[in-house]
Each structure stands twice: as C-alpha cells, then as structure tokens.
Length: 218
Image (cartoon, rainbow, N blue to C red; front, side, top):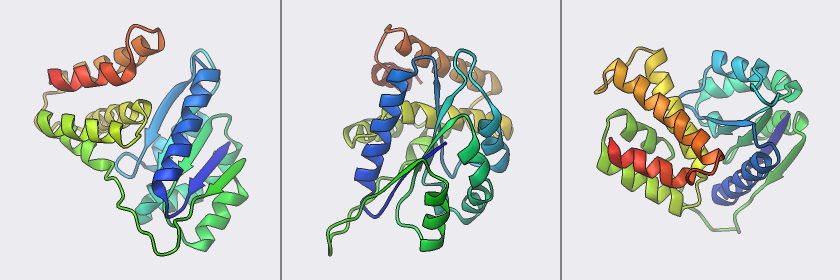
C-alpha cells in the first residue's frame, strides 16, 4: 500500500507525511516504523520491507524519504512500484518536485496522493536530512545534537529521526564500514536505539527525549 505526498512545498508534504505516520502508529500500536532515504536505500532493503511482517502485527510502516533524488534509488523504486503497492505493509512516499512520468507511475499505484505546490514566485530552502546521519557516522556529538534539535524544531517526527539513525548504524554494520566506531560500539548503539524505541512505546519516556539523551551520551 502506498500513500504519496510530493511537491515543491516539501515542508507541507513532510508535515502531512509525518501526521500520517503518527496517526497510523496510534492505531497500530505494535507496528514498527522505519525510514529509508537515499543513503540506506537499495533493492535488497526495499524487497525486505515488501515481504517482511512484524512480530505482533502484520504491517510495517515505512517512510521513503525523497529516494527519487538519486537516479539509482529512483530506478529501483520505480521498478518495484507494483510490488510495493501490493505489499501488506504501508509505504509512505515523500518526494519534492518530480517529473511528470514519475508522478504518473507513483500516483497510479497509490492508495492516496496529495501534491503540495508553492505560491507562484515563492521558493523554500530544503532541510538537509542526511547531515544528521553523517554526523552520527562521524560520532560528531556536538553537530549531531545541533542538527537533531534543528530537525525537531523544523517539525521532523522523532520516529523518522530514530529510523534514520538506526539505519545509519545498520548500514555501517552491513557494509562493514565502521568509521570511528568499533564493531562492539555499533552493536551497542543499535541495541540502545531499539531499547529507546520500545521504551517510548511503553511510556517509559518520550522518544524525542530518549534520542536526545542517547546523542548527548555518545
């Protein structure tokens, strides 16, 4: 199943996509949320989420965050569009400005789609969602915290930021690219991210607070 939000007004499109994520998570309290962007997107990952099912509930909620900005990930996405549409999992597709052919293909396979245009003559600066993952990969705590707070203040959902951080760690482990981390440190960081997410769902703390505490402890 696909929900598609796109257009030049990426802020409004992002807000709408996050509202849907939060609404779905409230309705499906045992569902798991994941975010895929151009940094961690590949054919294997998309196929995994097309077929995978959650332990407690048979649906994952996956945010595909502007993966069409890279021609390779865009090609993978479009080649799998029908399978994604037929998946039991929920895919929320967030994109900026797209060419007409791509829009038509995605809309044709979407359960619902909304376009967000800017008023004529108005331009908006886009938030660089990948800088946060880069800072985490470099263990740059100061910059990571600044980018995290900016993302929250700009309206990014903590679930989306958590998903991005988790997949950055998982991608580093899968590709055996450890950077400034040891393998044990990355496994420990992965475990902490999982615990923070589940603790937030149990009401131990807010996800936003839990993530910020983790960042400050790096």
